[in-house]
Length: 305
Image (tube, rainbow, N blue to C red; front, side):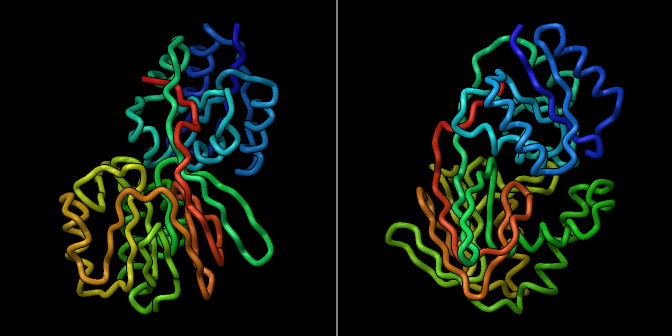
């Protein structure tokens, strides 16, 4: 039997002991399975990295988007395949990839032999002072506005897990109306021959960009190819209703004043003074002085549906 590792987050909002037992029972029929319970996000990544080194065929992330994000960091560019058992609050990654929302059904798909799909991700090289790090985003990343929404949502973990997308929406309204309109442009943003000075840059490379349950948010009517960047010069309160309507109705946000939408982006460069908050897949990555976001095609193997 091929070996399979299940890295689980028992505090994910939809996790139960019964669902974990069912998943292990299903996967044990076709694979030699190890269950691992990491104590932190970094431990989840290191555990997945060790599994890749041991040539484990499938590494399963059982949790929410955070667990999937941290496990995937170790699998980028490897021969190991990512399996997803979505038991988190919003499960954006699983939904965007068309994977089942029920743990038992997701486990059956993982246990059924089939060729993996290979997807692209965004490679983020982040600089703060003399320190440089590399992260990968599976469905979205951003600097400024959305990163501050993530930080605000994380201030109250209970409400995040209990109310999910409603909590994210409340956090977005709070940041968008109370905090961010006072932010002055401090980002130099470049993509090819395009440049701007702004307060935020949001980068989309799947069909939708969302933390709000099943509500899709788009920057333009066209799908990203490979990436689409929304550059926000300023966020003024009077423009928030128009931004919300356009995003929810798939109208281009480029029609909004002080908003630019850049399509067909392969590499985006950013410098910040003062530093700017950054997020990937809804995970806060702290503050950075500079960043490069580059499309990395066919770099992550994922169990197919």
